[in-house]
Length: 265
Image (cartoon, rainbow, N blue to C red):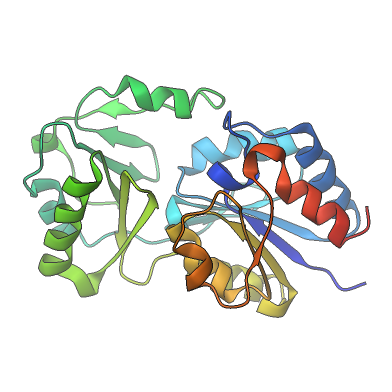
């Protein structure tokens, strides 16, 4: 039997509508690991946030966090880290933005935000991961894996244009949801991280099955030999990934259902 790497996004993909793992998802992934397959979770979430789900799965999964800025092995060893150039990060921190748009920095050690945002805590309720409030004037531009703006899509579009004009070639700019603008160092995305992981595991892209639902999954899905896009995915994603298969809704544990059929579990 050929070993495969099964890699999945979390929110909107592997997690249910309540941002939690369904019992069938846990059972299926454990069964596949027992068969000798590899599993990786790939998310815009922070490593410490993702680790809770890996612990719940209780399998030796690799973690691609912060949209590919960090990669950890199943024993929590940091395999790769990529940071935004401090000069570029300072520009992004200082970009003018409406007061309702929240500025976030993801670092290896934690999550900084420019003001309280209680609505974000529900997204992380199942993991307990939380932010530290740091006024933007006091934010350190070094060691930043991701700059994240949260808020009105029209305001985010203007920030995207400004970031592109300032340092476009040195940044990777994407969205994880319509109201979540995510900026990493140039060349940093889930696909690049996945490519290095496949090489580490002595596997090829043809040996990889990937699942995703939003634009920050594009490169990862494009690389995988078998790409599955969720029914609830961003409308543009399916067109961006050649040969992708549309599967069910994340609220109905569609990844687990598809894998169970694919591997005849």
